[in-house]
Structures are given as structure tokens and as C-alpha cells.
Amino acid sequence: MIILSIDSATPVAGVAVIDQNTILAESFLNTGNTHSEQLLPLIDRTLREVKLSLNDLDAIAVSIGPGSFTGLRIGLATAKGLAQVSGLKLVAVPTLDALAQNLADLDGYICPILNARKGEVYTALYETEEGEIKRISEYQAVKPQVLCEKIRGLDNKVTFLGDGVFEYRDLISSLLGRQAHWPSVNNLLPRPSSLALLGLKKLQRGKTEDIYTLLPFYLRKSEAEIKWEAKTCRNL
Amino acid sequence: MNDMTIMAVETSCDETAVSIVQNGSKILAEVVASQISTHQKFGGVVPEVASRKHLELINVCVAEALQQARLTFDDISHFAVTYGPGLVGALLVGVATTKAMAFAARKPLIGVHHIEGHIYANFLLNKNIEFPVVCLIVSGGHTTLVKISEHCSYQFLGQTRDDAAGEAFDKVARAIGLGYPGGPKIEEAAKTGDPFAINFPRSWLEEGSYDFSFSGLKSAVLNYLNQKEMKKEEVNINDVAASFQEAVVEVLTEKTVMAAAANNVKTVLLAGGVAANSALREALNKRCDQLGMKLIYPPVKYCTDNAAMIGAAAYYRALQGQFSGLDLNAVPNLKFGE
Ligand SMILES: [Zn+2]
Image (cartoon, rainbow over all chains, first blue to last red; front, side, top):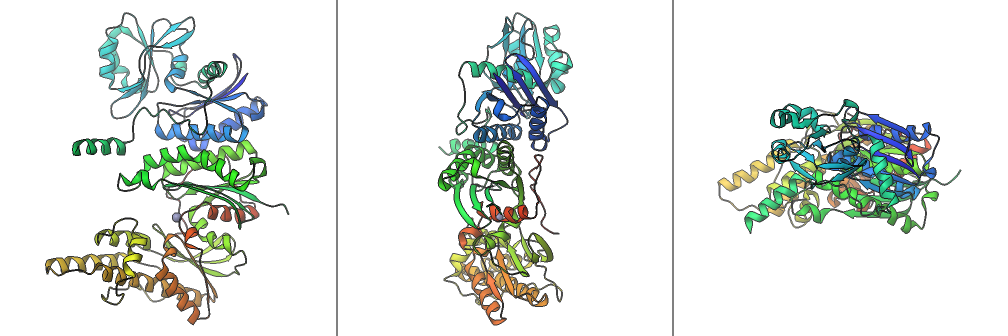
């Protein structure tokens, strides 16, 4: 089965093509937030390089969040537009799962952290079992201090990755000391091949999405909704 | 030549619109999903909410448009999309979706300027408009006079130096408590008001200038309301609306026919959201009649934002071989002229 993966949830624009467990091509651009310009040309180039067209694929895997609201929409709009015309199946992979997959053969806990602004990170905790990741917490947006509080009670080392590492590495190190571990730079950010591998698993389990109902996993409401609900609650 | 069957997408503000237009004038499908009820509770369009809504609605609108036209993607020869100006997050959903569709269908893509779309709403229903024409574009963001001598080529004659006409309508509507959207509310109130009750100033600027300025007029209305309040005198809202509208319409009308006469142009086009205003249509009609000019404007439905106008503009761009690449981006403050 051949999968095209598309990720623009974070500052990275990523596209990969895999055939079963063989990675045929992987394109990764981390040059700032210009996904609107870069993503589709990247898909075009990557498919050309492996001499495949959309017709040759079995499914598209897309990173559905949490992440940058705008980035998620560009990725999803692109994936849904491609799927609507080509009739290809669509599978959705949570961004944090795909990130944890980078370290699926690691010992101990894995904690992807994505910059969520407002002093928070999008995160979830994972453990691994024979090269497979297993999520053991809710997806959440929390302050890194709160996250470290919870992690301190765990019995094993925790490896952090994701773009949140750039901002919070020093803070986390100071709070967790030697319990905190850091991967090498090549595994730090979302890899489209990791996304594709999880997408393949979903496809094999028949977990495909309907393009008319699939939405980004924003995790957070919009500011306007939060304020409106706060106001409405006060008025009650 | 083969028929050009264009699927056009417009998501610049709070309406998700998809249309299929053949050869620039035959509308095969029109689907509009309005978000007005969603935004009402927030008291205006919230960009993040609008962007989320567009992504929820766009694929359904595309499917409905194909169904309405009884076509499949194979029958679509070109894809067109508004790439600016507008709300960036809203535009991005339309741009990303349309680019992906064009790529998957291996068909050419045409990025359309929203304002050019408004102009081409005229050609949507009247393909045989003879050039040259002078077109007055009046909307919430634009008050612009252009001379058009051939398709997709504009000679800018004048534009607003401060507020756009539509903006002035909105601000005055708010000041006299009529609310949003200002244009239709003022037009309604003006119907039972006296347009000569209050002599608001007309800003003509320097001799021979086709530029506009509405901030002075707006201030005059606000001053008038303040003075009335200080004197504890009652204000006739309908008279204020009618007198304000009259002042705007008079300047728009006179500058437009002056520009047309000075350029030896016999045909005048009206475009943009404010082109739906019946007082403006009537006044321009009357003046054009007197001067032996022909006035053309789209039906109200095509004055407000729609995707069919984007499909019409795209047709003429495509005829000239002007296509966009897969790197087409949304440009929220895309300029028209200036
Ligand atoms: Zn408009």
C-alpha cells in the first residue's frame, strides 16, 4: 500500500511517500511559516521524484493537530481537496502521535511538546512497546511547569521532543534534572515518514475519514468563543 | 474553441461560495453557505471563527455545485479562486482547497483579484459590453474609478483618499443606531427620509480630481448628531440617513460622469457591494441618460460577494493565458491600483 503523508501543523512542511514499510521519499522544509506557498509544490515535487501520480496511491495521511490553527487548515484543506478530486482515502493522524513515532524504539517515556503560545505546550505522554508507541495521557495544552510537576512522579526517564524544546529546554532541565532527556536534532521535529507509517497502520485498520466531516483537532477553542462563553456564563 | 467550464471559489470574508461558470457568462451552479448566524452572537465577523467555518463547509459546497450543474470533476476545465484582498485565514482555506483540486484534476489554476471579480459581475450577465468603459467600484474597502479599454487592463482615474464609501455607510449607520450591515440599513431608513433636510458637505477636492474623500462628510454627520444631543433636540434618523446618502451619491455620480465625459467614454459600469444601493443606481441612471451615456450594473445578487463573478473574471484571464502556479498564496491586503 502506498501512502502520501502531508504535514503543516508546525513550522515544518513535510511530505513523504511510503510503500508498506519502505520509505520512498521524504521532503522536509523548515524555513519559516510559508506553508501556503510551499506545501503543494512540495507534494508535486515529491511525487515526481518517485515517479508516481495520485492515481498510484492508496491513501493520503494528514497531520490533524494540535498545532498552528492556520497551518492545520492549510494541510487539511490541501489533503481534502486532493482526496475529493482523486477519490483517494484519507486518514488522519494526531500531530503528537506522529512526533512520538520518531522515537518509537526508545526506552522510557516520550513526551512531545509543541509550542502552543500563551506560555503553554500541546502535549501528551507516550511509552513504547516493541517499536510501537502507546499514548498514556490525554492530549492537552498545559504550562510546561505543570507538565513537569506530573512527570516528576514517574519512575523512568522522559525524552522530550518537538518545537517546544527550543523554548522550554532550560526550564524543563532545571525542573527535572537528569530525568529529562533530549533526542538528537534529526529526530526533534515532525518527520513526514513517521506520519506516513502511522497513517499506514490506520489504513490497515480501516480507520479512514470522511472529507465532509473531518476537521482539524484544534484542542483549543478560538479566542472569540472563549470570551463569548465567559461573558455568557457571567450573565447567567 | 472548446468550452471553458470554470469552477470558482470565493472565501474572502464570511461566505463560502462555489460556482461553476461556462465561458464567462453561463452560470451552471451557484452554492453559497452563509456564516451570518454563526457570527451574529459575536457582533461581527470573527476571523478565526470564519476560517474554521470555511474549512467545514467548502468541500460540501464543491460537491453541491457539481451536483447542481450535473457535472463531474472531469468536466471542469479550469479552477479559479479569490486570492485577495480579504481575511487571510479565510482566503487561505479557499486557496489551499482550490490549488489541491486543480493539481489533482491536472487543470489550470487562476488566482483572481476580488475587486476584478466585482467588475466582471457586469460581464457575467452582459458579455457584449463595448469598450472603452469607465467603472465605478464602490464597496466596504474600495471607492475606485477606472477606465477599461480592453479586458483585464485598468487605467486608474481616481480613488478614495480616506474612507471607502461602504465604510462611511457602516460608520454613519452605527452612529445613528442602525447597526450592521450599514449600507442596506441606511438605504432602508433613507426611503422615508428627506434627502434635502440637512445640507451635509460634499467633498469635491481639487478641480479635475477624480479622487474621493468621505471622512469630512462622516465627521459632519457626527457633529450634527452631537449638536442635536447637546441642544436636547430630537433627531430624525430617516432624514439624517437620506441626507447623508444623498451627499455620498451626488459626489459618486458627478465624479463618475465627469470622468467618463473627460475620457470620451459612453458606457459606465457600476460594481461592488454599494452598487446594490438603489439611490446610487437611480441617480447615476438619470445623469447618464442626460449625458447620452449608457449605465450598466449587475443585479443586486451579483453586487454582493459571490463566486460566479470570480468565474467570470477568471474566464478573461484564462483567455489571455494568465494562470497561477501551485505556489499561489493568499494576499490579505492585495492592492488594486494605487
Ligand atoms: Zn466584495
